[in-house]
Image 1: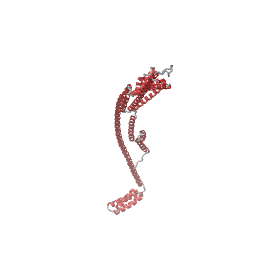
Image 2 (image 1 turned 45 degrees about the vertical axis):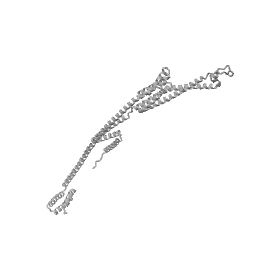
Image 3 (image 1 turned 90 degrees about the vertical axis):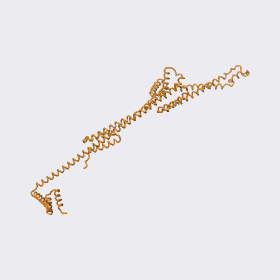
Image 4 (image 1 turned 135 degrees about the vertical axis):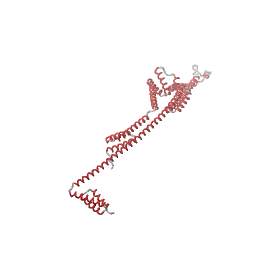
Length: 450
């Protein structure tokens, strides 16, 4: 006989299936909410054992949830390299604003922005960018103090930006001189050829052709001087062009070196810096060479720091992974133990529930048996309370039964069969219960010859 499940128990089982599905989907909050509802149902039903099992399950889920949250937080933390890159971007933005302010003649604002950018680059140990900004700050401070511009020779050697500006100014001056020379040559060429003859020919005896009032033109050595100036300007222009090419190439190499260093490729960065030194040596720019050498020295420091950081990060990850595996194993062991405890508790609860059901069925059968006995007693009492004729028939039935038993015991089968058949008719008249009637029929069948 199968026991019917109550609506509350069915609801609890349905909610538990949904909660298990949430756990498989790693939806821990939804699972905890459903487990709380299930515990309320079991509490109302009085199933304290099931409530205890679910409490342990909830504790295990909360432990797992906390552990996964801590692991996720440690993974998503921002790295130091990302912070350094963000600072570098801020410094470059400040540098651009400073240059814009200087172009708008806002020298004080430009100076403040340069100093902010310098502070960031010094904190990042970017010596090359810091040195360039120091030159700009020095120039702006001299202008604000009224000290005039920085001497040309010093600014060419110390400030790459000023060196480019000075080259542009010299080129403008050279262009104006060349235009002036071309204008003067055009005027000279427009004069009569005899006015520009050599000096020896001008002093020859030609009195009949030259008027007495004529004055000689300047000698040819003036034209040679102009040619020499033009040649010097050309040489200067060629020298500036070569210096500009060298400067551009050197700065390109230094930019490549900085990018490689930022990427952690220190060997490539060192190669680019050494190539830029070879190029700068062609112009004898000692100050800039010293700056590059300091950058190379800084590379060694950054490379060592990067190596140490990588080792520390590797050790940290190894320790973190080891700790994670240890916690995971411990959690698995606890989970297995809890599963065993829950299985044992379920087994005991099932045995207890089954024993209670068996006891209930046994008690019910006992009640039914007693009820039948009571009914039989009532029937007997009813029969005894009937008329004298009925009582006589009962007595006759008892006497007939006694004789039939004696004949059967004496081996007188035919006589015994006759008495049992007569007794069967009396039982039917007395309306005895089927049990007694069937009992007499069975005796008759046994005595009949086979």
